[in-house]
Length: 147
Image (tube, rainbow, N blue to C red):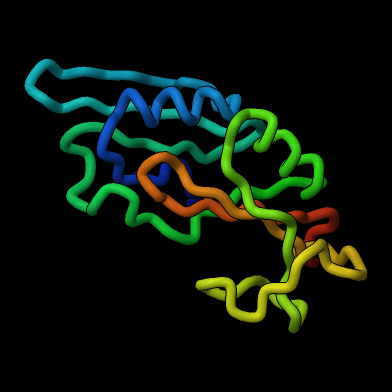
């Protein structure tokens, strides 16, 4: 049986501010449902993604800004960084891990610039939404076998 990741819930403090932030990134607004009893759910989808994010009121009991490790994948990390910065996002410089494997929490082993060999899966930028939910953008130019 296929199991596809379709939705990730992110905790936010201000639904409209978050909606505006993600729309400014060019994400498609899929739903903004207000039940009238304080429950509200907003769903947006990044361009080209099959997975959406949901946030709202009474959607998560997690502290706003507590989501970490959210990943977006792009084919050109430098172009993605430029696009995010042009959209007003405070985005890191491109970086890679000194050991050439993924990236480590807190910037440990982080080296400025893209992976020197431009290996797929090895170059990153990071940014946070207005609440502090942490996003990493990863460059993938060639998928590993089986992917």
